[in-house]
Image: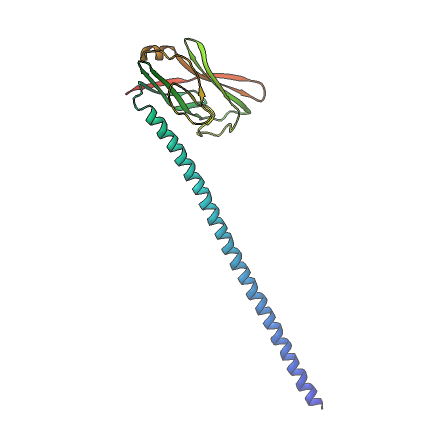
Length: 208
């Protein structure tokens, strides 16, 4: 009788040990699977996010290129091409057509090149003969260096300039020399502490 009980106890004890080992092994295996699955999910999500960001950048780049090509097509026969730069800003695209009755002006691709503390707004002003021809203000996406300030665009004549482009009916001079002599462009920037500064763009011309 006692031998049978001892034998049964040993069997039960062995079963407990086997069960405990099995449970521990199962728990350890589950944890490994969980870690592997988690790491895999992280990589997959990161990969998808990376593809999404890359796609958006590609689309924005293509959009900018298409717009730039549109400008190029409209100004193939430009009389003057110019760029401008001040202490904190620059613009990369300025073109003028002075061909008889066909007179067009396009100025785009403004960028901030140096940071300004507490910047609140920036105002671009175009003048001819000292008189204001056009002015446009921007208060968005400030202090993002070397990034196209999309709200600052100017044009006149028959040209496509896209969204947020300011059109004016100012009559352009008929000669290159008059345009160069009388044209002026500057930018005023103001900060949250109430200070405003005006910078005149230094214009660099090149002839076609």
